[in-house]
Length: 500
Image 1 (cartoon, rainbow, N blue to C red):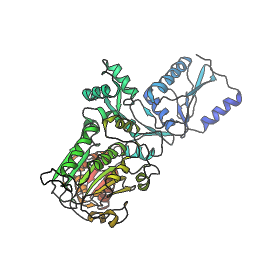
Image 2 (image 1 turned 180 degrees about the vertical axis):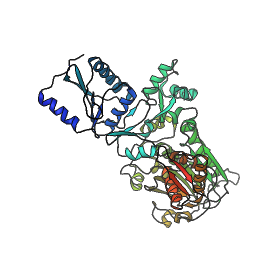
Image 3 (image 1 turned 30 degrees about the horizontal axis):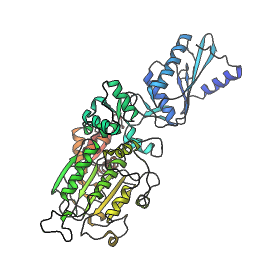
Image 4 (image 1 turned 135 degrees about the horizontal axis):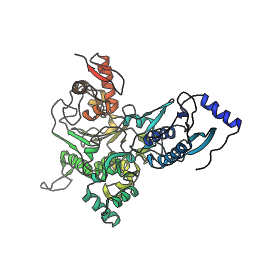
C-alpha cells in the first residue's frame, strides 16, 4: 500500500476547513464504507451531477476519527472494484490518503463529472444528487425530462431485468446466420459476449431495451407498455362502444410491424384501377408503402422513455398513427418533411437497417410517404408529448383545402365530445384529433384502480389505461379538483383515498 501523504500544516488546515463546511451537493462524509452497492450509488449520483468529493474517515457530525491502516487497504480496494464493476459506465476516480497522525488516515475520494451520462449502478438504478443527499429516479417520465438534452443517452440502451434466457433463440439464430453467417453460440458466456458486442446487452448479461424489443420471445411480458393498440371506428369520430375491428399487437418489433400493417390493409377500401376488368381484385385506396414508412417511423423513432403504447386509429375519412413523444431537439414538422432527422434510438435504427424492418435510411421515411400520398398531415404536440401522422383516405377532403398541413381540421379536432371505447386503451370523452384522449372514462377507470390498490402509482395507471403519464397526471389533478380523490402521505409511502 502506498504510504499516506503527510500534509503540510497548511494542507491539513485546508482539509479541516473543507470538513468544517459540512456536507452539501459536492461533499459527502463517510466514517467508513463496507457496502459496495451503497458506495456505487454515491459515485453514480456525483457522476450524474457536477462531480464531488467523499471524505472517508469523517463522521456525519464533522468529527474525523480516521481509518486504521487495515481499513485503508480494504476501502481503497473496494473503491477500485466499485468504480470498475458496480457502475455503468465505469468511472475513473482519484483517491488520496491523508495522514492525521497516530496511525489514522482519511481517504479523499474525488469523483469527476460524468461525460457519458446517465450513469447506473449495477442494478440499473440512476441516482441523482439532492442537496447533501441523493435520490433515485422513480419513473421513465422523470428520466426523460431530466436527460432530454443529453446527447449521450438513448432509451433503447436502457438495461432491463431480462437475461439472455428471454431470447427467442430461433429468431436470433436466423438473424445471425442471415446477417453475419454465424451459428448460434454454444455457451451462455459466448452468447452474452456476442450480445454485448452487438449492443443488445450490458456487461451483467441483461438485455437492454433494444435487445428485448428486437429479439425477446415475449417482449410484452417484460415491457408491456410498448405495444401497438389499433381500432377501426365506424364514422369519423370515436364512439362509446361501437367498433368494426380492434386488436393489440405485441411481440418482437418485426412482428408488431407486420401485424399492424396487416390491420391497416384489411380495413382499407379496394378501388378498381383505371382500365382494369370488373373481375380484377382492386388496389388499396392508399398505397401500402405509405403505411410501411409511417409504421417503421413510429416504431423506430418513438420516445421509449414515455410509458405508453403507439395508437393506430382508423376512421371513414382518415387513419391516425399516434406515437408517444414529440419531435426531439430542434426538429419541426417542416424539417422532417424536408428530410431532416435526429437519431433518438440508434440501436433500433441500426438493426432496422439490417432488414429486420423495411427501413430505407435516416430522414427518408416521411419524404417517401409524402411522395406516395401527399394527403398526410403531421402534428408535433409538445405539451401532450405526442407525434401524430394523419393519412386522409381516398375521397376525403384534401388537406390543402382544409388548411395548413401541420394542423388538420376534422370533427374531433375541435374537441368534439364523445364517449370512449372500453378496450385497447382508447378511453375518454374528449378527443382532440391527435390522440389526446381524456375525460370521464379515464377518471372512472382511475377511481376504480385506486379502489382496488390504494398505493397504485402513476406509471401503473398509465400502463393500465394505455395512455401517457402526462394524461394520467392531468386526470388525477382533475379528480382532486372535483373532490373525488385525495392523496394521503408522500409519493413513496402515500396512498390514494377515493372520496364517495
